Length: 178
Image 1 (tube, rainbow, N blue to C red):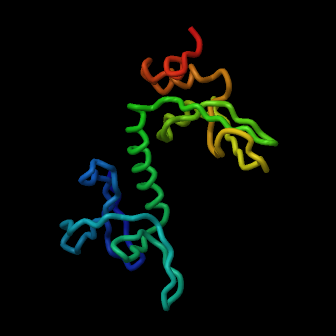
Image 2 (image 1 turned 90 degrees about the vertical axis):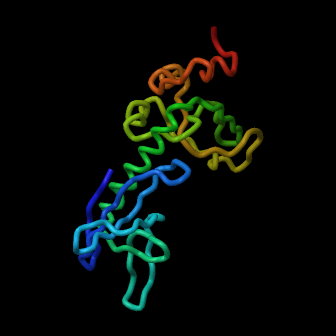
Image 3 (image 1 turned 135 degrees about the vertical axis):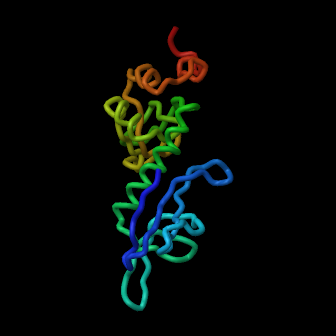
């Protein structure tokens, strides 16, 4: 994906998603000189806020500097980058057992082994519920867990939607069912 935006001072910036040398999707900023050709690229390290002599500035963190672009442009391209990264997780996705037993709440369920992209999430969201073991003052067994788990009895449907390979199914790995 590519997005053309402007800094607060009016300079054109081309934001492009590309893979780094490790194959990970990253957002790069390319300042566009007035001649129109693209200059060298800079890795974007996220959104930041800094205090300056003139007050607070916010924008993309790029090599110790801040490029003041509209936050909506950053959120758009960062969201696409996250979806590209998360979509790659689907190749090895599976359910992971979570157990936490405390004085207020017991969690005995499955969660996803990795994040999924927004389109996939919209397909499974109704089968998920959010839990937070920090409600417990005392933890008797298991680990603390905050996040999304599959609603009881919906594990097979979630695996079907996600396209979990049979050898990675929770039933195969745990010996549950027939």
